[in-house]
Image 1: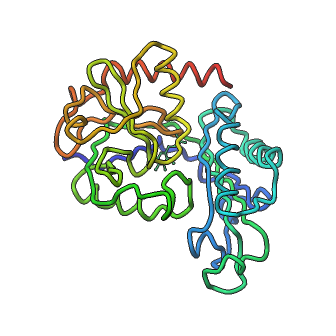
Image 2 (image 1 turned 180 degrees about the vertical axis):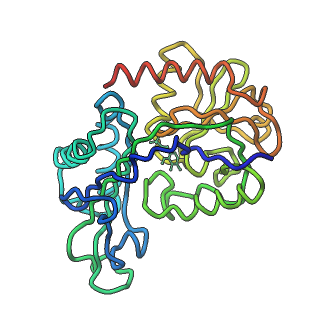
Length: 301
Ligand SMILES: Cc1ncc(COP(=O)(O)O)c(C=O)c1O
């Protein structure tokens, strides 16, 4: 078994040691970008975030990312303290400070902010939100297709912590990832409450069977932005694509499987629970969809 890889693996880039980070209206060197131990994000995972990618000077699907961010903030009753234009200006301020033009990845985080005392009640966050943006030079680099393992951790019902929400707290996903790694895989394939295949701990999940592309209904997975874009490009290209329930039996028997996410676009899956998927390498359909998605990104920026 070779070393573990992750879907967010990027080429080493020494420039990332000297990046500037957005912290509450200021852009500061990485070493100075620190938040209080009283911050609700640090203390409780109380916040929401976005991962965005810069291509040729433009943020891909910026409107969709802003929609999701502000919707998530509304859902957790968090006042971001900036409107959409303000948030985009913060992204641009950070981009300019880092002189980034393309192949950069931004993690934009908003927490409920610094608390007056170290307890859970949201009313203890009285100083306004903490807004940070980490922007790194980033070129995805995967030595081989991803290996997945199914894990006991499921995607839950929306009345606990809605799995659609891009929440700071990712403990369920992290535990799933740890379990997968301990099983010798790279990442976790997570089922939904009914035992259907849903998503992975860090990406959305697709299979290809007999020329058809299948993904989950979307009921229990993170509201990924790449996922519906893949569905759209398939439809536009005449590829039969279905958002449906399917099981591990369908998945082990798939011709191809791939993951979707802002960072890696479409990442091939070579193995699931020790079963080689297709040839174990990136399949033709995955390759084709990568091309369609790349074109969509180019057209959208
Ligand atoms: C659990 C999970 N699923 C899917 C995704 C992919 O979402 P997107 O396509 O918006 O990057 C992410 C991204 O963070 C995630 O954490």
